Image 1: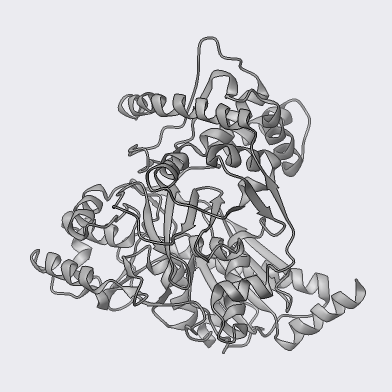
Image 2: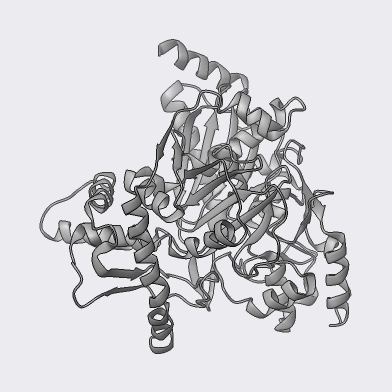
Length: 534
């Protein structure tokens, strides 16, 4: 152990360590890895989106503060564990929640507040573009946000010189480069799998469309350049190093990997970048990614997105905006109740106890039916959020059933989309791997296995998730040696990785199916709540 600690300290001091930072919905996290691709230090910054004039957003100040704070916490962790000061890195990369809209003018001024993926305000644009391209263009995609602003005649549109995603923005601030990893770029605008670049036919169609509306601009001039994993995306500038490390210890010149989206880093962190592999990322939002062997038979607009792996393979994504957010709120309420009685329980212990209770619940949740819609859900055609809890008149209302229902409803919208892939498209997968906070509890694995009616594996590194995946992409940049990404991960990262697999029982699957039938029927209640409650 002492020798290993000494080795890690030496690697950090010599500049051999690799850093990945990911901007998640509720946490920004930095993960430093050593030569064995093992996380050796980390730091985090908690944040929350705000609803500003009907728009879910984060401010630029929050973005910058979060970046510097999570780095400072990671740097502090390095000092405390290994007794050295981090000054050099072998490589570095930034990832973030995909989609959304950050628009700037020619002077690099932000024109409107950042519009995140969570917003469901681009329905008209999504529908028109999907029809124009005969290709699914979801509401949360960057091009939907831009075109909706065009349709709304928003004053800022005429001044847009550049728009990008959150990962693209942070990378730009660190490197000066307006680029994007192809996986994240595929959540801005459709990618041509043959060229691994924006679909030129669709670009031309869009240019013609906006020209008819009086806009004299070209789409390719407005979006970041798309590049594949393994391609250097610039270097850390002196200004970028100062933005990252307020102490001024970090040296500039670090090679930067292409900035990626959380979908891509999730695929990497679960070794799910090859055809017939898939992963489920579950936290504040939830999405399943399945790398396809061939195109789908038709477009499923609003249901199934088509994106790519970080190295450009076509991938089907079923995405839901809401997952753990509502049960997090309930657990916080339970903590307040415990504290009101004069007691205090550590947060991890409380989560373990409450989520663990779900394993003792009735298979179909005993007639309890929550809807975790903090925000709207395109998958189920719900345009606003109204979190609800409903129970049948004869329901068995107890804690195990309540917690099981919270886990099941977190996967309701996702299951709606996955039914298309499994049932309508007959997509075959060899393995499905989970990562994210949802899988830290055994009950999360059980619920996902029941919902997906397929075995779910979780790697020992599942808790590291996206930032670790981004660090692996940065390591691939400098250590790939010409191998494709899948081969590199299989040989260098996951050859001896530990994992646990849960296979749902027939009774668990049937119980989820019964719950899901009630969930689907109960969407009428959710719609009524939106109509009746402001």
